[in-house]
Image 1 (cartoon, rainbow, N blue to C red):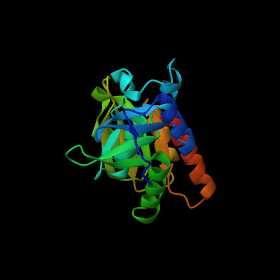
Image 2 (image 1 turned 90 degrees about the vertical axis):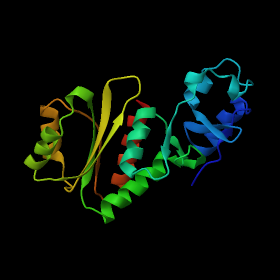
Image 3 (image 1 turned 180 degrees about the horizontal axis):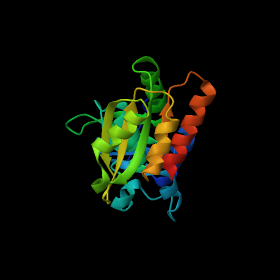
Image 4 (image 1 turned 45 degrees about the vertical axis):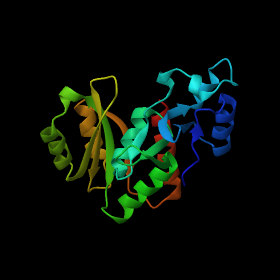
Length: 213
């Protein structure tokens, strides 16, 4: 369910109150109906004057944390990791603000996709752009009797590194993960098929930890 965005004229105190009310660490901000960026609770709490308006904040505190309305679940997961926010704005192809999505909603949708569309799991890797070799990654997957059914690349802003989200047609990824580690890949998140509510919550907590690193 989309949360009402903040307005640039809102005070920091109001923004903080809204985040605490919704139980989020971030919220989108609009200015004259246009998406300005996403602000984080931690950044707002570090400001000296909570009666100042959001519009008075420095530009770098407004993160361009958004996805497009037709983005795949795997692309959205990568965006959560890149921008370190638990709420992302959703825009249309023309940049019009349509609403927002929370990490908890995304995880539920992703779990549904894994469980009922294509059995298997997914892994998110972080690596240098120059180290990306699809043939090697496919070989690692095949060595674990798995096949890549989807793959998405997200650039990490301000660096030469990328997040690589790989959907595999195999549920047990232990052997494949060990091989990735032997090849010095940085494993940022793992999502495997599960019908257990406890396991789903554990994966949600891991995603939240990953986002907040």
